[in-house]
Length: 122
Image 1 (spheres, rainbow, N blue to C red):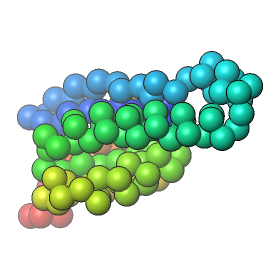
Image 2 (cartoon, helix red, strand yellow):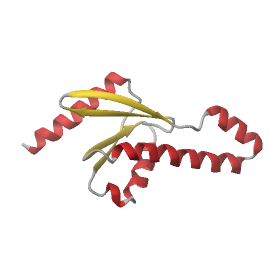
Image 3 (cartoon, one colour):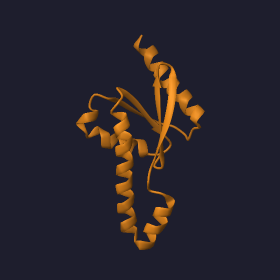
């Protein structure tokens, strides 16, 4: 995940299904907002990012275990947001710093991460 897109991959029963949630704060919005003032741009960006993280959080609520990964600090911002909400208290959420990955690389990373967890439990 990054500040623009979150690729949510459901890994259950050995299959993977990926959906994408995109932030609604676009480069065009940023250009328009800058013209009206930096403070306005910053407020608009914060509001849109909060909406983006809320959408991702709604999906996370459905799981017992989640790995947040990606090249930016967006995963940490999301983690900090959900970590303050008691509705996420029973969800095991981990964070991993990674480089930007293709969908195939993401699937391999997820498969390896959860396979290693299962092996560690044996």
